[in-house]
Image (cartoon, rainbow, N blue to C red; front, side, top):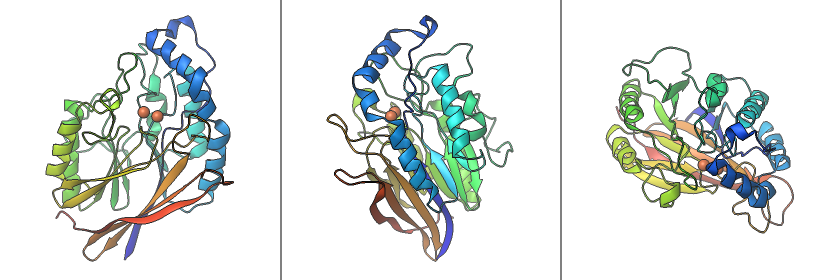
Amino acid sequence: MQKLVRLAHISDVHLANVAGFSPRHLNLKRGLGFINWQRKRRFIHLQSTVDLLLEDLRQQEFDHLAVSGDLANLGLPSELEAAATWLKQLGNPSDVSVIPGNHDIYCPLWSDQGTERWQDYMSNLPDVARQAGPSSASGFPYVRRLGDVALIGVNSAVPMPPGIASGQVGMEQLERLQMILFELADEGCFRLVMIHHPPLPGQASKRRALKDAADLQSLIADAGAELIIHGHNHRSMLAHVDGASGAIPVVGVPSFSATYGPKSGELAAYNIYEISEIPSGYSIALEQRGLKRDAEGVMCLRREKISGVMHKQN
Ligand SMILES: [Fe+2]
Ligand SMILES: [Fe+2]
């Protein structure tokens, strides 16, 4: 067995720096979001929890860190700026990959650069134009080569009406994603797709779901991938989707900041995936670390093989 990469995965940090906002950025969606933050979310998503988990993460061995969106809450320029500063604390852009979540691209920001502040963490690596057709206007999907593993960052965040947390990949990205997956299969890469929203139909309620999940599912079934990771639901999820070369694991990670409280759901955690090459294909071992009710500190919550034998596509 040859280890290819150890990838750490965090999501839905919801950094707690919502300190009000100027009338310029006030609208119905942000107003409702702010009330929700004041009444509920600020008691759940604590900076102290982020710091605690980060301290534990820094003691682990991993090669690369994937951040699958929702760093902010109301998509305010001040929040996105603070998140950019926080990303620098996590590591260099070559060691950390990010995609936006629905709370990062919350409302149109017009002339503000929005999540482009994080561009260095959301670009192709090495920084070369990919062959898969003309590059998209948004720069997504991007591809980052981590040795024989290719991390493909897909953006599912688009501004939605008040009360709606759904997402959409869109035709342009879907077409490019299909070409990229075929290209990387030809290159013999392990293809790891990162997306904020759960990618399969039925994995989230209608007002929180990916609108084109059925299209994405059939694309994956056709082009194949070896692992899909996501956030958004703030809980551990494991599903499989039939791909061209077998069942592909689809793994959701809890929020990185969720703290115990009367209204909290699953507590803060993060995942580490160890991806290895074995004679018959690939093996993926998952370790989840985080908080546990009525226990102190960060600990290992589970260890399991999420894919024993996966056959390479070519
Ligand atoms: Fe979230
Ligand atoms: Fe989300």
